[in-house]
Length: 174
Length: 155
Image (cartoon, rainbow over all chains, first blue to last red):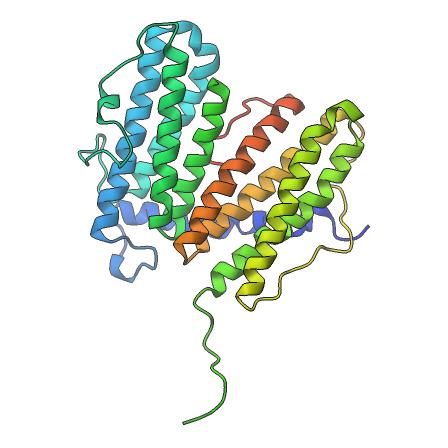
């Protein structure tokens, strides 16, 4: 055989991670307002995209809150869901870093397709907590996937990746 | 005015290059899943066959897309070397994880580079599908956690 898998075309995609990381780091720099001229940033966002990014941050904030509610209502879920909740929080941190001006709590309107009530409601009971949570994880994955095509560069990659991660979480809660 | 052909790069040149990487990853996965299947007992090969067919279909779709844009699609390499010996069912599962993680990286790069919204729609769908397959193989490989918050992105 020739062409080791580690240098195969798939691995070629791995090697491009550094470039992708650079793009995302650029997004984070933009978020902190440290760039000299954001207009010159090829990955700059429009005002409408700023609002949409804030909406996606809110989607994720709602999901993180849903994890907390479900774990409170059904502590036995911790075995499965505590690690998933940690991952959801990590996703929230990265979305905030990529969203210019996003603070600890977003004031953006809910993203399309996201029930506004999910920010404040809770699972019906302990027995239903798992399914209640799975539904919300799926809704968040759908919302990020729907938002992804409206962006370019590192933000599109981040939204797509977060959506994919949440699809995996939903599968674990099924 | 010159009649010379324009040398301006295609507006989708970067996207096409990323799609070529995704196509190359699909070629690799089609090959790699044959190795995965060979290392598993017959009764455990169904998910392998399903995944291999998914990557075949994806390969054909990507090749068609690139051809429609006047871009010559990359072909499979003459051969590939395994990153580690595949001697057991666990080894096979780990190889499958490697293949799907490579697929996720390729599609994340497509999302990063895409200029067409339709390509990003394809990318986000394929990235989600690859992560679901990867979770199944991480489970089979005994890895924890089986989920990852950022499929395809650097740690």
